[in-house]
Length: 114
Image: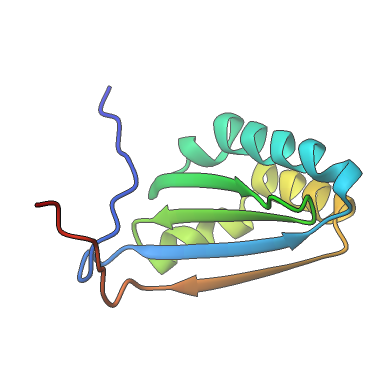
């Protein structure tokens, strides 16, 4: 089985979802677990899925999901998937608000190692 990791490269053609969830601190861990389970059980098995990275805010009030899909069409097909919709509704019920947006990588900058 081929394992793909997140690679952030301009011109890759990938569709990037960055979704930031606002959550009460006492629900942050529950949201992280729900997103991890949704990714393992459903998302990673759907056509076009590349990777997902779940980040928790250090102040306890945010969770961010950085996910890559092969194309916008693959991402939109995921949105129509009943299993994915079930998990998305469960996540929405845990949070105060969420802001999903699609992106493409324009540039990457890194520190040079001497």
